[in-house]
Image (cartoon, rainbow, N blue to C red; front, top):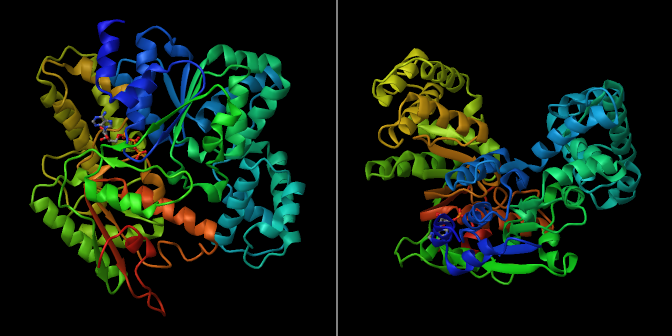
Length: 559
Ligand SMILES: Nc1ncnc2c1ncn2[C@@H]1O[C@H](COP(=O)(O)OP(=O)(O)OP(=O)(O)O)[C@@H](O)[C@H]1O
């Protein structure tokens, strides 16, 4: 073993190390929240590359979001596993579909529909119906569910009884809309997001030359968050694998939060029966959170199927989760903003704080309250860092400057470039301006964090590599995020807001299954916190009064 390879293993605990050394064959890792599963899989890949078992070009790490793929790619790069690709299912599938279409179908691949709602709106109009934006989104969600569950419209029609009713629509109308939507896309030569996987899977099934090419390209697969895989993604993964079995899947049944969209943890929990020679590992040591948070998380999931029992690894702490109860949503937002102001006054960095909520609609009130306190925020998922116009311009300028012999200190050159796109040393007023300023400032902080002696050429290369990997620099702002989008992330101080019955769990979660999913979502939210977890809720709604969320008491938090 080379010294470098041994170095990679040194960062791991004994369980993680065993995983990193299990390089071949089917491997499943059941890993609780904060137990270092991302660390285990990135080090496993880096170890495989470093020991020469893996050709980096033939390794594919699959995640569910572009953000997670960017993080993974960034971490792999830091571990010296350049060349390994981290992609979303969708990203990898789209690249393959565009590549194969001209060869096996002819012409260019159909155009990808940016979203379903506009096409659906046209479809329902042609049927003489008038539906709200919300109903159109519900119809879109049903189409997505049908496709990822691999059901034809006919089979879907047979199951319609067990699906949620769509406001004001008869079963015949629901089916009619789906048929017309399909026809409209065909006429326009367009495909939607799920069609990418449907079409690619079909192509790989019937076209041995295509599947052979894919299997030539990729040999070793790792899938993160496997508890959220859909039947359609599972089918595609099996097609990528073919007869081989170099597949490592990692997940936590307690963090399954996309069942509503067709995901199921059964692929994770049944991995051993699908691959009888699989090795199964467990990670249950929680490194992320102080013990009282881990105890609360364990309580919330007690006796739930597939739940792991986390053992806290951090030192004992008296930072127990707290619950604050407010009269109105506005009072709650103000209370949270004040608490954040105070934490910052005590020295907590804005980037170390997150506010998590059940639905995106909750963010506006929080944004307002935080802006009133002069707190910089970034709304997670609103815009990708490298898609920001100013960031792109700044990177272009830096790249241009790297071509000129400029041996001034890096910090000076970069701040000049940033000034050219409107950055100032002092933060501006106004939430949007401030967010823009924070984005540009994060480029400057990145320059500041480069090893001493790095020049503009080295920095420009680093930026380009990060941009390619979508690896974002850290912004000095409080993160506002829906819980779904916070999966896989962590912050020292986390506020989970709207913990009121009817908000979280959400009012439309009625069945036992729906409530279980809400509970897992609460589990994801609570386990994002490293040092402090502050929960809150509010009593009054339009015409009624709500009690605190059941999840607060279930986590053993007193109020
Ligand atoms: N062996 C270890 N020693 C010390 N700290 C560790 C170790 N493994 C992981 N950690 C730390 O624990 C935290 C969680 O790790 P990571 O993000 O890899 O977890 P995860 O299992 O992917 O989490 P989740 O499933 O909740 O998103 C990180 O702060 C990481 O640095």
